[in-house]
Amino acid sequence: MRRSSKRERYCKETLDVVRDLETGRAVGAHSERMRLERIEVIAADPAAPPDVRAVFERILPEERFHARAFAELAGAEALAATQGAHDLGRRALGLAP
Image (cartoon, rainbow, N blue to C red; front, side, top):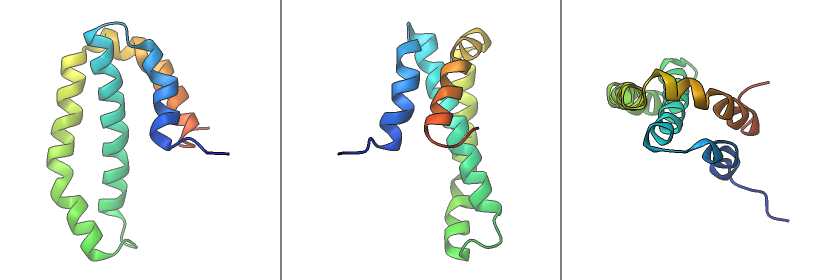
């Protein structure tokens, strides 16, 4: 039996709420924010190998820009409308209780 990938599990919970460009952008914004959170943790982890931390520290400014840009493009209303699906997607990934 093939286990679905993490991307497939997240998408299964979020793609059904995409109704228009704004909600599509909002799903992207939630995903970018989630990715940024994980990158920030690794970049700040003193137990991570120094070369790994250096790579993640280097990409942090761009990832912060991506998260901010997607959120601004989506707008507060679309972000709120897709938050529940994002929460389900995080749970499907094991990133939320």
